[in-house]
Image (cartoon, rainbow, N blue to C red; front, side):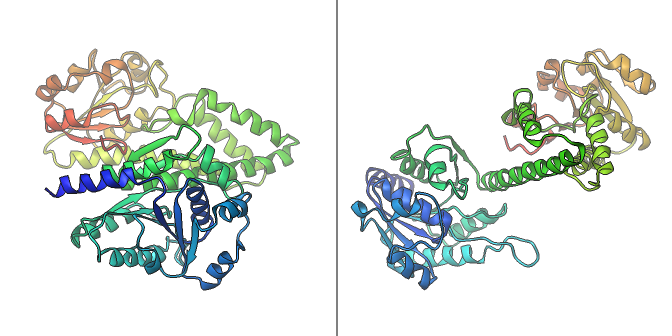
Amino acid sequence: MKSVRQSMLFLFFSLSLQGNQVTVVGCGHVGLTLAAVLSHGGHTIICVDIDKETIAELNNQKLHIYEPQLQDLLFDASRRGKVVFVDDVRRAMDSEIFYICVATPIASDGTCDCSALYSVFHDVVRECSDTNALKIICVKSTVPPGTMRALHDYLVKEKKHNIHLVYNPEFMREGSAIDDTYTSNPIVLAGESLDALQRIEDMYNNFLNHTVKVIKTNFETAEIIKYAWNSFSAMRVAYVNELALLCRECNADISTVVQGLALSEELLPTGTIKPGPGYGGSCLPKDASSFSKVLEENGFSFSVIHRVIRSNKNHIDRVIQDVLALLEVSEGQKIVTLLGLSFKAHTNDIRNAPSVDIIKALIEKGIIVKAYDPQAISDMKKLFPHIQYFDSPYEAIKDTDCIVALTEWEEIKKIDFDKVALLCNKRVIVDTRNMYNVEVLRKHNFTYLNMGRTR
């Protein structure tokens, strides 16, 4: 009965989305931009901030920040009364949706300080507890993974069934926040209530003038998307800054270098990059190493490239550690099967392939190594003549204690797990390419370790 009642409440809420009252807590860049855009979409916005001076200035139509178009959009005379500024969240409790846009600054130890977020969250929850009306708390503040889950679990523990939690991080840039919101700001939504996620999406769809790019996921994924987005941007800016100084030393032109760098998206679009056991082959390892030396010779001994090389080595080492950890449960001499030896599919190239480091590590531990690859066996035999090679993945899998999938060959991607389950000694798989279906492996009782995938 509870779910039916909530569905009816959500239906009523959906029908009243256009022109409803929304509370935005936090009158910084994110909060004021959101308030301006939502008010322009026909909603009444109650903006809350504990800084009384800031609220007084806003009530006098004075912005304490500069953002193009924000002044006009927020204080449009024809829409006066659509945005109200108050210094106490208790004056904004008639809203159905509460956006939390407070700052989460860096604490003295370098961690994220979520104290303001927690304070606002508990204030809103406490005030919402006096009503049975449906409420949605939508957090836009940037938070570490696990934060939203903790808030959600608190609502469940306290039986706040009328309050639904959504995470909706922002991706706008200061200086173009309004334009970004209308034209290029993706919408990432996370939460346990599909109805609540849909209500927030519907609110945006009512006024955005472009085809909205929407990702719906769980709390942890959304939290990491936000951090990964900003950190990736930081990494690219830092890399270009290093290149600029190198260009200065080498009499090169940074503008043209960046123009050439942008063309890399044609060969390796960011959206198509998939995790793996580490990069390899003839180009990336060699050129990254050589370039790191060029940087060192020009005074850059600690560059982004140096960290990339270290990161790749650490990643391969982690794969090895994962395999060894999973083998600990087996008794006697262990057998490991490697599916794929070349550094990627559609080539027989084993130069700097992660498989080489993995084989070395396994042999040193006294582990029997069995291997299959449709193209790279003859080359690998020159390096490791004494490991066991097979003409099919099924022959290689027979009696093994652990399968390590390294290369995305079609025959490896499409192996029959009904058959595999009967052949192997231990049902253990390390899937470094995320090739296999989690549910299929779960059905066959495999211990399955992949690269950060939940489904």
